[in-house]
Image (cartoon, rainbow, N blue to C red; front, side):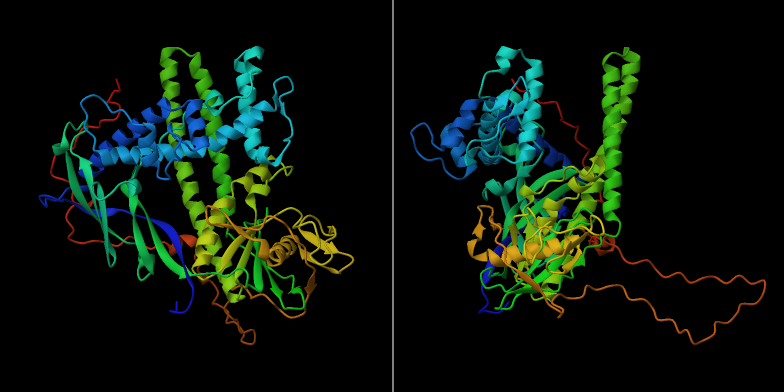
Length: 604
């Protein structure tokens, strides 16, 4: 970026693992296995305290206070969660005799307050829906004003919960309205994580030098610390991922500590400088249509000053079979879930010996289902970032400054059959849209969401309904004599709405850009090519003029098979080795392993 080019600041996230740990006071090395145990003790204290706090605050008065945004003295609540919790008197309770620093309490109250603030919106929506719910018919009446509108998927979920509550209680109790979130839902489960972003330098410090990140954090030395001497600072050293080397990072944020099957994982965040995109000055836009046949299709529309033009020839993303693999894994996970549920029903009335056998089988099924979920998560991540990279390159080649995507809150797969609805729902479109926003910001392209209704059913020229002469995937307009692939036509309409409504674009509190009203502008089909040609794998030329030599009789010639095309998995580089580093996984800690403490702490 040049000095005169406008810049913007964009936060992003990445993960890494420590390869060395030492005691910050004595300098003695700590084995990574012992480090995992000490982190587990910290996570147990945080998880237990946050669970107790959420359970104690799970009452309507808590959400009334958060909805009002005022404390007992009528003062506005602070934005920071731990400050608001301290003013409201929300303090977690630890087991008797356990000493926990005040900075760890700050981490607990900050996340608990953020969770309750998020659920305050659901509480208001559930109260509105329950007031319009009829227990006799099981239906929810239509909203009377715009303030009562909620997404249809959320309304269906609340309706199922209201029906379940109606079956559990009698008619007189079910007729009491309005209900609150505490009446139909239980307190949320707490994930074992230590979000250090709410802490200060007394608990954690972060230093980044070149390609190395050093985190100093206080960890307990025992499962139940009784004093300050049982909390010691540990200095963790981790390597930055190669793709962050040389990036214009302006600020590194404290990470989140979590444990997985491989040990301690650092979920980090940072802020970098990127080119600032100008939505109002954009003359070329790329529309991205979420297609049921593929993850997405793109097309280019250009504003020439005399009107909008497009060649109506787009680009369809090829996931190279990853979508089929995701659908297969989802079907397998659903099968394991149904089988485990059936075994649970059988175990309720089975003899003790048979019940023990069934519980063992259920545990195996649950482990397999969790493993499938982990595998789906990895495939989804590779798929979404590969898609974002392809679309961002397509927009950069077309010199576009705007990428228009469908508003996912108005897009829902229905009436396409159970199998196709599941396949469309599990395609991780929200995560793909977030990955596209993240990737496009690096090249100065703004991603804006536009209304999705009618994008694939209306003509981009005359805005009249299209016909389907060749089936579902084709579109044709008899008046304008234009048409082609249904997804490409929808992408043209989305790009048109972005260019026509760019003056009315709004930026939400989360930082995303939205155009909430669809404005039509006629698009002329031009004979000139406006979009770039997607790169395709080139095949080796074969000379047809040379006569192929015949092999001798009785000799079997080995055929040369071309190597398969590289997949997205080949883009993952191996972890950097750190030879001679004390405390790595290859060198176990010398101290005896500590005993697990899960479930040993009891609240009184």
